[in-house]
Length: 233
Ligand SMILES: NC(=O)c1ccc[n+]([C@@H]2O[C@H](COP(=O)([O-])OP(=O)(O)OC[C@H]3O[C@@H](n4cnc5c(N)ncnc54)[C@H](OP(=O)(O)O)[C@@H]3O)[C@@H](O)[C@H]2O)c1
Image 1 (cartoon, rainbow, N blue to C red):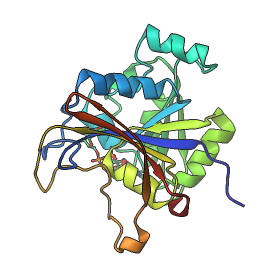
Image 2: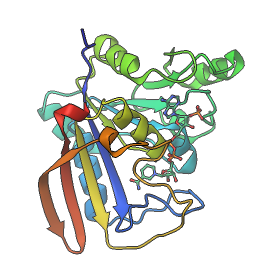
Image 3: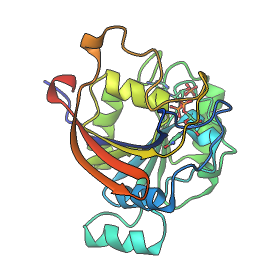
């Protein structure tokens, strides 16, 4: 029997050539204010917001609800005032000095694996509300999502990248919906991250298949929503 897991959405802004950051991989806000509002609006629908360790290291990420207006929307929808925050860091390499660990608006969970040295986990436990080891060599994401649902009542989880974490979720068939803002720029660079990196699918037969369910144009940006087809989940 499959473990019950939350409904999982991914939200990313990408350039017209599919990049999510320049080759130096530091965070650059290349989306418009509409894209930022869209990101915060999506957060108001989620019990938890999650991202990978390199995303936390690359920017002043806090993953919070985004201010009083959004907090009120959450309360009206019957959600907690602030969403839970989740960072995936299999080896525990995420920087405990990163802003998210010092912005204490809501519980912060770190998902790690048996690969993480105990000393790193202890350091992270000092700043996070919970450090959960799930899996031996990498974070067993399916198991971790089941745990989030059971122990933290996460019914809807929004993943905000980066490319490596997104790919693992897609590879394991754990994504239900993809929100992609296509921004009117070419960033280029073979080393620039994309929305799904990692090892990639070796055969097209294994690729995640999508159905376009919504599209909206604001200025030169295209806001798209894709359902991950059931056979890819
Ligand atoms: N445009 C956008 O919307 C957007 C959004 C987010 C991020 N970004 C950009 O994306 C880049 C970061 O993406 P990225 O692909 O390099 O990294 P990432 O996905 O943010 O983080 C990768 C790290 O997450 C951990 N991880 C992910 N899946 C795991 C698994 N199954 N098991 C164990 N650990 C796992 C590992 O941490 P450990 O090394 O600790 O094991 C891995 O090194 C940055 O340039 C950022 O600015 C852009």
